[in-house]
Image 1 (cartoon, rainbow, N blue to C red):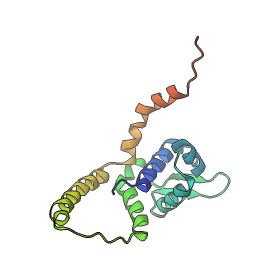
Image 2: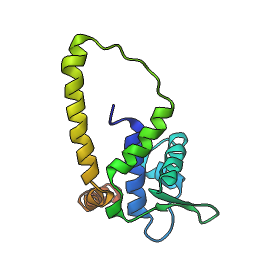
Image 3: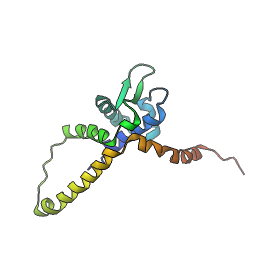
Image 4: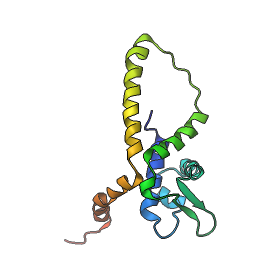
Length: 149
């Protein structure tokens, strides 16, 4: 499936870092707290994103993660490829091809996947980051406590 949990968690992590690491690196524990991504998955994903130069990792007491390049230059396809590489190491399932699957379902899935891949190629973290302003007011309203009687 093209939208597996690791891919979604990777997008969330990179977007979180793009939002919150403007002045200092973001720790994995902060991402886990804000996004609810299990830390055992997050560390592996972050390491893979560093390996693909999508993120930079800094060690030490002031360490954490920052973007490896500008938001405009990180595309969803980059994140997808990094996660896909992680998945291929653990994947060796053989699927039986029936006539219906090979003649009808597989071409449909292939065409749909190609459309999504093209969308991933043209969508950057910057494009998603622009939408943060729309939800920021909603997040701030949730945090406010109303003491009126």
